[in-house]
Length: 331
Image (cartoon, rainbow, N blue to C red; front, side, top):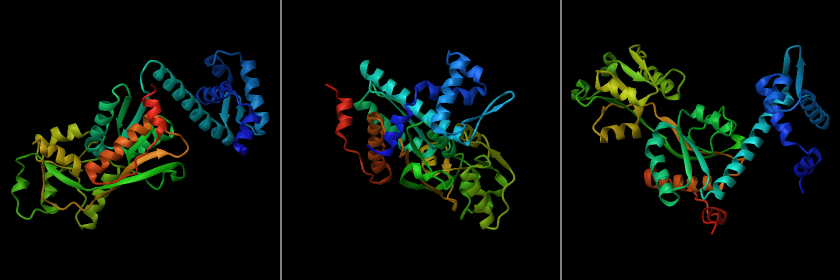
């Protein structure tokens, strides 16, 4: 038995202590936290004191009008949230299995793989396991990473940046993401011979919001080409708004190439024949190392990896796990 197991046995942590830590973090007051947990204030105070005595640290500073977590308290609160979330997931899996369902997987993706990779992978899983519940969120990498940290997502198809704590993350790169300029189908720039960025200056651009990676690369691209950064801009992260705006104006948009190709295939937009040297970093599959994936999560991971090969030509190792089959085929 390892040291961690010995510690857990000695600590005899109670679920109500974990619940109390989270309630105190959210309420900032022992009385309100006790009310949330349907216990008396003295009982809540004793639970907290017992935990502090065992850990030999102060978890909360007692203030005149409430309580504030110390650094040690913040650490315990963070892990209490993860532990409680895992217990909730365990309960959900058990209840789903009892009712004949196969559990839930929560997937987050950035726009390009959300359009080109995720639908085929999800369709494959649903064809084989129609009762497995899958929820999808399409957001920026930073938003998705925060939700993964909070245990609100199980799998990401997104970018991993230097500021992310890579010691607890598993990253499997899939492909880089070129970008392009797009317009409406009858845009006058399509008739310009040897089109360059300089030709597009007067049309105005629809770009991602400031602070986004693509916007930063877009601005750098103009600076490196010794062009002034455009000031005639519309900022949006909504592809549907961009599409409609481009169709109703002479403005030019910047999109990931895969997304742009989808629009051109459906004759909604045209890709301009102009070099856009602002390629995005690669994206890939991101999961947490400190959490065991559920069998249902492994099923979706395998489907994503198989689909990545057919879409991008990227071969990723697919899990072969007998536990997955026992879970999905309990009879």
